[in-house]
Image (cartoon, rainbow, N blue to C red; front, top):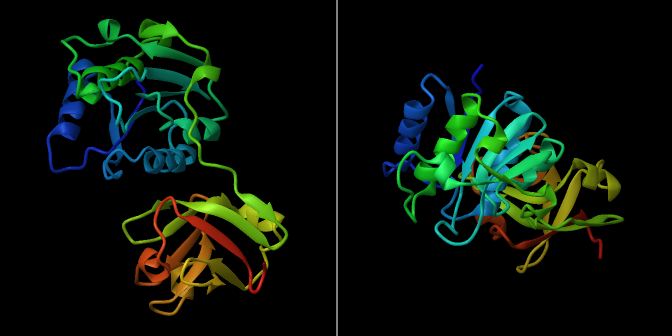
Length: 271
């Protein structure tokens, strides 16, 4: 029985790259379903790709093949890997893009370094491994190939990790970073609902966000419509992350933060 391929990349939709990868899978594994998770990951943004991929894991078929191509190191000595985790397979560059998904799947069980000679039916370019290595590997796994057919085993402990950084949780305060900004301007922070509980902030109706221009007070809400139009607030988003959002406006512009910026939220007046 074939496995579905769930495809994520930073290729965008203006060029032929996504379509060519679809064509490769259709040629090598006819009939295998391909689901496009997103191709709007910001160019070369491994962190954004990792967060998006992990957010899809709980809602994906357990036997899925995750094809994740965010590959700023294409053509260099970075490794291409295929990993078995929780019954699913993940095919990607070994740069951390699958790191959060591996955690969501319960950890890697087996992994191989993809061998282009075993995987690709044509010469491999130095700039498009999505077409020449990753898509053929995903097609092979989706149509029943064994992981070991695609390359030599590697210790899963050697796989690259994504350095998200654990939030610093203190009484009444969480120090973290902005790990993502979506197209609506919502800011996803590197903390979850359990961190809010650990800091004693779960029941707080108003929280304070530290920023360079001075602290800003944000109401704790459940959904966007709980806020007045143009008002910023804090909620736990659909993937379980703490997020700074704005009703009908961009929270990123409203509070002046971008991905990678330090973010501290806490009780009003906490130090």
